[in-house]
Length: 159
Length: 272
Image (cartoon, rainbow over all chains, first blue to last red; front, side):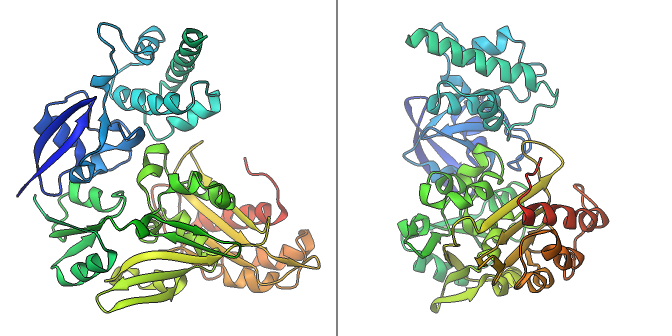
């Protein structure tokens, strides 16, 4: 059975038919066509499917798609601002914070959730923000450095 | 696999549907049920959920606290009046899990998960249940003992606010800052004239469900929180527990380290 679902995705209204009981990750990828969100474990364990729902980080693989009706969803596809990469994306590139890339979409969205709420986080706060995201390459140090770089860059632009 | 999803504005209606639908599961935050759906669990044919605002309400008064079963760990962390529970809520998953994981869901989390349920056990919480025949309540310990047979919707949990500084919590993990529990200990340690009176201690990951440390509680009655006072409690720390071997730790290891961490918790020593 298919259920109609409507929500805002990266600022644009979208509508899709979802299998009853489907998770948001599958609906975003298979029904909406947003392939920027990646699936890892489908168990709520690895964090790679992290998206923002109404500004809060959520694991799309364990989020019931139809519970998102009327909500605002952000994925990595919405990070770029026109021709410019998001400061987090630039910092990840500069710090070589994406090795195999498996965790990168989730890391970026977890970091965005943090910086949206706390533009000047401490290292400890960055570590906590990504503690639910697993990096198979164990490349946590460059990721943490990139998030701190992005935060400092944002701070400079605001000043 | 497709299942039927039914959403109700009123929790009571959801409770009726849960008992009448064949092979139905109640969905709150999704950390348990969505995972089962993703694994095509054939025992689930219907999902029941509720958008009832009471399900996600935190009611704090001077002496009584009621947490709707749909209250998330993130909501608890945002509630200043629940500061004593912040270390427990923060110990549940990463930020994205805490946005989804609910108080009610934690009561059903299999070992080695369920640290929040263990904390509620140490707080002597009561579970408010909504069923097809109306509302009823049950002590949390009794509820946990038969949770696999539960057919009601957990509406909320209720407990008395512990005396200031009387509640303590530690979660022991192999991975830092966040990992699955080797074990967790929650303790409510009320003092009267420097002596413990009515201490409550509960363990996570030391049994199939969160479990009270009744032998240690009895041994602490009337004692002071110093090395000599807690020695009998440490000797019986593992009494009544039945830890299991899993990927996180062996049962033997859990029993071995339990008194070490209980000692640190009772003496107020910091945990690394």
